[in-house]
Image (cartoon, rainbow, N blue to C red; front, side, top):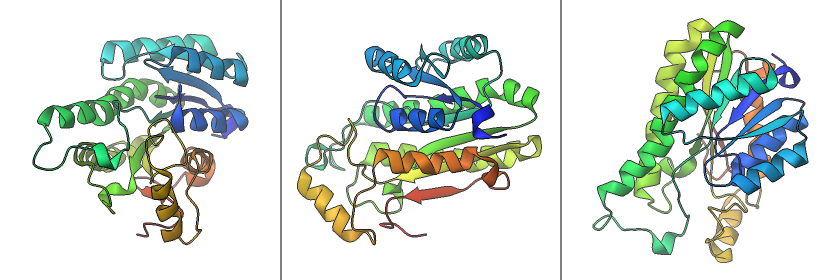
Length: 254
């Protein structure tokens, strides 16, 4: 299905990279469900920017399957069709501040639990809620948002990285299970992006070090990252599933 014909759900789209992804889809003519949990004002501002015919802001905690089901129902009612593309971007609150992170000897299991709930449990809920609509459409696209840190753990964010690694495994098992139904499941993984709310605590010197280590000699922006997400939702990726595309200026090559 062409991007302009799609109804897309982007979780955690009120701010950061999710906001850039929602903008990218709307720019291509898609209708976008802008999911948020706490960022109500930012999500509604984004909808005003994109236009009420192109976007709707819907609150839901993706960890709660009942709220997710209600969000899908509201999206169908608002746009008069099934959500055929899901971008799992939402995660539990996290700040990329390496100096403040808990070290291996001190990190508590509760931090892992919170990250697994946000990244894995939330993705399971949205993917399961999307399946009936995707079946009705004859197929669908799921794009999960990952990280390059489990390939290149330059800063050991133990909880966040472990949850995203689990999400990659889930991406591949869902891809294997759903491919026969015309549903592709892929991941787009970034490094540190310049700049989002989550990376705002990162010292400028760290950005400079990352830029110097990449072949492109710059840090990837949220907008550049969002463009790669569009690929997996587009007809050009119709035969691609179970893949993890790293978008970080070449810092990690695999």
